[in-house]
Image (cartoon, rainbow, N blue to C red; front, side, top):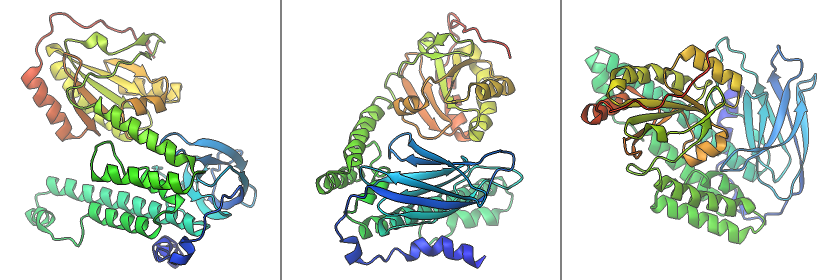
Length: 410
């Protein structure tokens, strides 16, 4: 137990990095050794693989190399590169560790999930490497602890609302905390940025700073990127990230309430192409989901309730899956038995970029004119109530039914 505690808190202790060390000239490193161990492997697989991926910082990573975990549970890569950057080790698609490639790195990974009921949640791995690499160690630990705390707080509030214990509810509503969870997270990340100010590795954090709305955070992120571009001409990721932020900002403007829903043309289960224009004249809920997404499938019964209640008043639903496994998509459709249009994205990354989401379920409510009314990230009971309220006020029986799209039986 003591070893685990020390491992978890080591990055926080390393935050007091000597300023002289950080002030050293950054040299372009062309080759490093990446090695590590995997404690648990999947016993059902004849070979357990580890992938080395180059992080794009704003999209899908690129697989650089792969290796088979040895009998001694070790792996090793010799990484050759034009310049240092952020890389991720993916162990059997169960465990991950990210590092900055300006020096040799080493990591002891847990690997395969040995729990009886497997749930993919962030697992922290400390990567031994350079001083700049410790920026990523600390950034990830802060982020993952914040994620876990958020879940704890959400669950506590959820059960407090269900409870008849008024003292419990009163305590949660009136308690004084040292620092709200969001503020605490922001303070820790801001400290990291100040300690590592001007270092190329800070691009790993800048990628999530700007958002898509003009304002102080946006301007700060763009200024930091401009500084990196000027200071490190070889850091091509900085220029690319800036261009991507500008794209996302412009695209987000097109997805605001009142704007036309972007046109799509995706395949149905029987291979025919279909879009959303056929639903003009009706309210339409567009649900981006995937077979492997638990919250997506938990939301389906709520959507079915709305569909059953309002389909005769001009309300339709269209589900767009971002599955990359066709069989898994079809199996999930059969299990969920959704009585509305089913489409499969022909490019997951492009779909997520066009519709500006990084988590699912993401849903858009579209009005009879084809314009966006509301966007929902996740689909809670509150979100369901919002849709219901809008439909109560605006949905009316349609003069004619929308053309049906044939679907194969499973």
